[in-house]
Length: 100
Image (tube, rainbow, N blue to C red; front, side):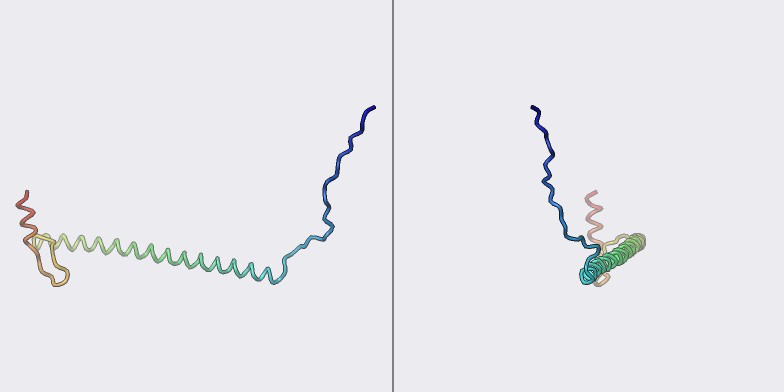
């Protein structure tokens, strides 16, 4: 005699109605947090832009310094200058030439 197999139904059916929306308080909280994240990201972008501009300025200033050092080399024969009082140090250049 053949036995009949019937599928077991172990599924639990949830009879509670499902919510369609979150509460207005929860919505306000989520919106506030997302707004704070967006504001922080905007500020980071602004800071990164300022950083880029400052790095570009430093590069331009360094180029100007190299040009000024070339003028000093041509006029004084050295770029070894004390930036505190303007004293030209010729001795270090003479020692370097002696080693060659």
